[in-house]
Amino acid sequence: MDDDDLVAPATKEIAILDLMTPDKVIGSHGAARNRRKALFVIFALAGLGLTTGIVWAGEVSVFDPRTAKLFAIAVSFSVTWLLRSRVVFR
Image (tube, rainbow, N blue to C red; front, side):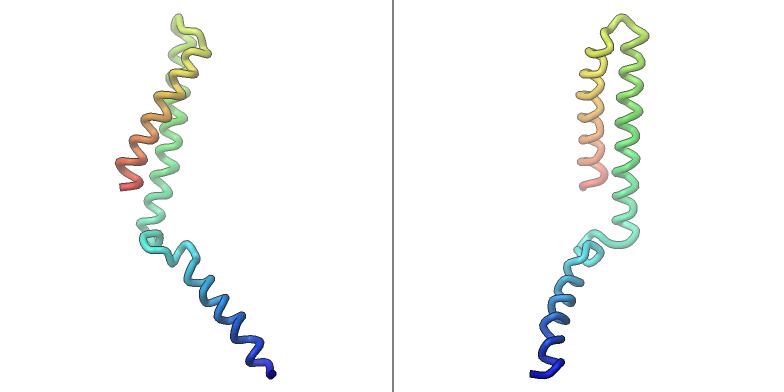
């Protein structure tokens, strides 16, 4: 048994793992992937802003802050999910 017999299996495994890297997966490369990642983050920040705005409005009005927070969580989650499902994951 020579050194070439020991190297070949490891080389094949590395080649297979190289094919499975995320940048080789269909639809997950280049500018399109960067756009999806950016939109994902932007919509997360929009959800955070929406939550903050709803809680703030609840605190300055007559609502209990806990009730405003629960309402804000539901609305923010729904809006963020809807945006991501319609824009990012289409």
